[in-house]
Image (spheres, rainbow, N blue to C red):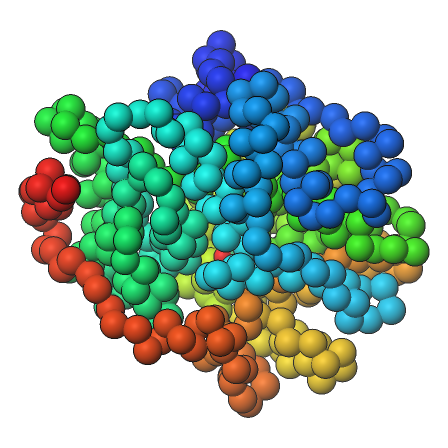
Length: 435
Ligand SMILES: *Cc1c(COP(=O)(O)O)cnc(C)c1O
């Protein structure tokens, strides 16, 4: 499969090059030159496939002959190590739980797959690959955990000191091995600036093999389409096409769902659920795209004011807003609505949503209300474990949730970080001198 850049369609590269470069040289995002199709027989026999077998069949279409079957199977075994269970919470409402990975959010799927694909592609390189990533919290922990113990790759995670949650900091700073946490005396933007400076520093890039692991890497999107198909498999007797509600920020998760649909997955409609950062909801409503600075909300992983994957969605549907509307319904919700939804669903269905999943649930309810399509089965993607957002959960239901044991145990581990000033030279010296 070849991949083109949305900025210049003539810029076509292999899967390997798309993964290792992340962003196209012209600044664009990579898309497959055509979305591959899965055979109708595959969907007819879906019940007989395990989650990993689904993952194998889907990824094979995107990778084609660039990774042989045995290696692809190995990549999937290393990456897909936890399930994506579908829980029924109401008559025809289901929740797809995507938080059973090591950092308790769906980003584990993308980060772990990307890490193993990169490991495969650099296997025969003599020089180590250095991944630089700046994080405001969740992405960094998923990437760090995904690359832990991956051969031939070292990861530097830059995070703003005292500006991420304690859980997030522990998830980044207690890993050891090939993961180095750099604690920057500055903001997230400062961290990002330093990473950018590193990539354009000829002396550094001449001596060290650098790469990024940002969220727009195509290898992070592909594995996110696996679980849409896994969800459909678990629907059992509910044979009608579902509506699927996706709590959205940078729109990567939604884009992966659209890939699955274009591959042949029966989906009646996708719902893009947003918080007060409603640039995309506005786009679907009015056809106007007006990016603006993000505002802080309870569902903070969706606080995105200029979602980059809108470029991929526009490409998929030929920049035709009516076509986009025929596939995607979108609504946005405030923090107070989010709190009320967490409480209501907890009381009426005995199911506890995190703030992101709660926004997804609200948008599904709104879909039922405004379309009168009330009997159709709906799936809400629960993108994180509620325990990661205990302060919000406590506001909503008056108590906290227990953290899973895996998280409890890291809270006792010792933090190890390299503290640096907001000064690029300090970062550069450190990387140059690192073994
Ligand atoms: C990143 C994230 C989202 C938003 O996903 P996008 O792919 O950026 O739209 C939603 N919920 C959680 C918990 C996340 O970490």
